[in-house]
Image 1 (cartoon, rainbow, N blue to C red):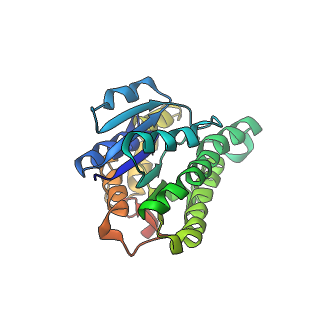
Image 2: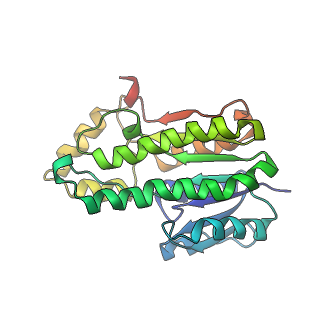
Length: 243
């Protein structure tokens, strides 16, 4: 039987590429996003779009149940849904902070909690989308960086707790990725061109990663080729943290 996956934040950017790459690898996929565009991914019998809000209390359990009802099992959870915020600490409101926790951290835990018993039945995997901002200090990203640091530690903690039950949990930590997500954030800068130049200079390969590059790393961490890897944070950052 073909493996099955549940991917959050699937409508665009990294999530969209993850769904595409998983399909190429032979997975059947529940592609979850609150954006209606996620329906564009539909492929009969292989990709099932699910329009839902990851912050809603009922969504994690309902999505896991949907994957099992559609495909008979769950082999992979990709916790990818997130929001970005570039704002210094003194300009970060309580509302900003709470919104990022509600989107970036709480759903990742709740989806993992819902999926883990099913993943234990299939010796499955979780791959979380963290960020280099959760590994190192990056100016003007205090709230976002805190949420991604939480994802890093969630990954390590769950990996230790569930290794004996055959479930592997890893994360990717992208640097700047060439997506609309990044374009929207940069558009708010006083000088977007200068901001882009700084971003590129901070990546030794001289460019941003592509969504497909991050997606292929996620597929690798879910594959049998990475069977000995758990609790790892794989940087896909063009050398950013190696400087």
